[in-house]
Length: 297
Image 1: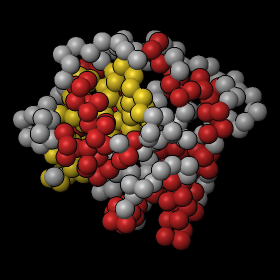
Image 2: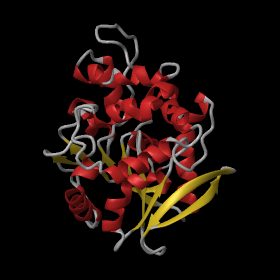
Image 3: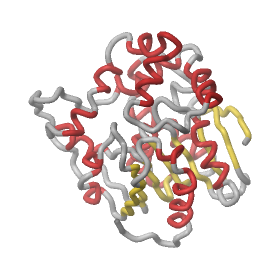
């Protein structure tokens, strides 16, 4: 693994890279509350064939972390990764997990010229996710933690007592056997950087995704298909035990995609990348090596 800092839009972004600089690029986008190093085990496995690039996204780790909420609008976050793709030489395969998936979708929708293929792991497209929030069902109930993260001072509460609340949120209902003491120490070090927790929760504060309380009426309308299409080959890998993002959050995704392949991982949850690294590697290799992947389930 090599570590370096690049300048994007006049600001510093930290990258971790594996593999040959001349190999095809896999741009790997982490979610909350991780950082670029979360991809290390998977990237090491794939680096024989691909150049794996995992940035600390805006507000995380060693990258730029502005304090303003509006700096974390999805258009700004996707703009960072568009600039990084261009810095890396143009069209890339984008892999996103959790919030990284939201950025990956925004990049694929807004700058399809930069995205060769799209891979999502337990992350959501704004269309099905918004529809799930409008419905007063299980996904709305499962998403109430977002209201807590958006609240004033949430970063202070998450950091208290050695990040006890953040570690608890990370693990709630999930299999955390992969979180070794060394990994925990590494995560805490990244969270402890000045201003980073504020940047991290500002992703939640800046989003316009509605999260009504259970039983609360909403006049929000579904996200239209036009203007939000995913035109390139798209792979969705889903850990079926996820307690934060439920299968309901992907219902009807095919309507927004020209080509979609779904693969379920029954024995994993939201942290599928860490729990079933070898299986995820095999799924990725099979799909990425297909010359023209078609629609499948």
